[in-house]
Length: 191
Image 1 (cartoon, rainbow, N blue to C red):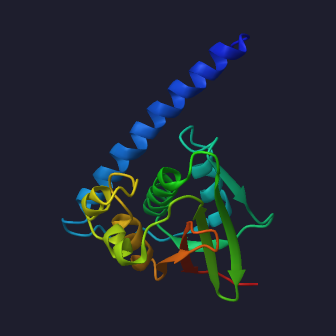
Image 2: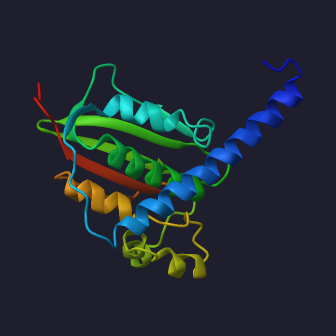
């Protein structure tokens, strides 16, 4: 509601920074749960398109992520909170690895009875030899020592959550050298 464009931009920056801090705290909290007993998954039908829209709408992501989504729902089954946190962790890392000029692209494609969600960050990427460290709790310490600008928690929670939902998380190199994180999950009632 602010009229002054500079004040609006400043307020937007404050909201983005606050939400970014919240994303990091949520990620650390989720990561710490990996060491304890695994909570059972509460299975519900979910629309992956809506889940992505929610994640991208966060102030920490709005200006940094471009979603290329299908117009119709893509239904999966699982725990909404766990999958939303996994997606937030993936986007947080992708955002950290961009070159500062590019946006992170996220897209959804259905392939028969599977849905493939791709999050692509253009920037420095992660050397192939160091990629396994992204998927290990606190493995990002090694990556930071190698000057790879990953988020504080990496992708350990996301990978474990996707596996618990019957899917897989794969890291791949993009043709421009960036990193693609691909999540493949089973579709409910594939058309």
